[in-house]
Image (cartoon, rainbow, N blue to C red):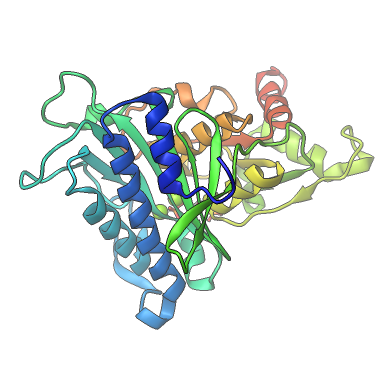
Length: 337
Ligand SMILES: O=P(O)(O)OC[C@H]1O[C@](O)(COP(=O)(O)O)[C@@H](O)[C@@H]1O
Ligand SMILES: [Mg+2]
Ligand SMILES: [Mg+2]
């Protein structure tokens, strides 16, 4: 395909190659439409009264921003009517959302973080939407919570939209990763970043350093070695970035390499990590692996984890292959584990 390929053309071409009913293409199309609507709200910001807090908390006790609520509504309304889905689940909903009886039901499940990086909304820094598509297990009639608790290796597709200086959509359905940029005048996403690959080596890492005193020894060792630069065992200087929007941090890694860590720490022992497995860690791990990188908790491959809860949190270490392998290696060394 050439550089003028639209996302719609790309999806239809992929569907031709794998066959199928067109259900998946239809679903992806609805997700893309939802992301265009969210991009518009994010872009208009204060002009349409979309900034600030909504005055309510979500199921996880986090204060919702108005745009969290708007983006969640847009995702639900855009994806519930067409008959592709059996149910959805969202960061902003405590329970799963079975497709209402007034609409036909389909064979897919959709999980999403409608707006990732909420703390950045009001300060005009990039935010995004992350999603993951699963199949309803064969034989299942009424969608239930346990149907969503599939390991990440079973994802049919994962992607994110990033609402930055340009709005982009980055997707994988298991055959590599492709990036599309929204041409606002045409109203279409155009394939601008075909076959994205993450460089295996990097000199850049991303971590919220304010949590340093809570880190486990392997993570502390890795970061200390990076900070020591030419005076330490690595013998080279490293650079650090932390945007506090996972979409933006992961996007940077897809564009030029790097390591992103929100590791296990001792800050709140009831939480094994900050990020959520089903709609943050799994889709990003699928994308990163498809781009040639690695994604681990430090102890296990993220995509192999068996989810036990809808809003389960996990440690996340992902990005350039050789650096993530090094960090995982540190977790295995008895002196540092
Ligand atoms: O505020 P911190 O500790 O730096 O955490 C930032 C992380 O939290 C998140 O914002 C969590 O996502 P939500 O905004 O969807 O809750 C990630 O995007 C980001 O990597
Ligand atoms: Mg998030
Ligand atoms: Mg969110």
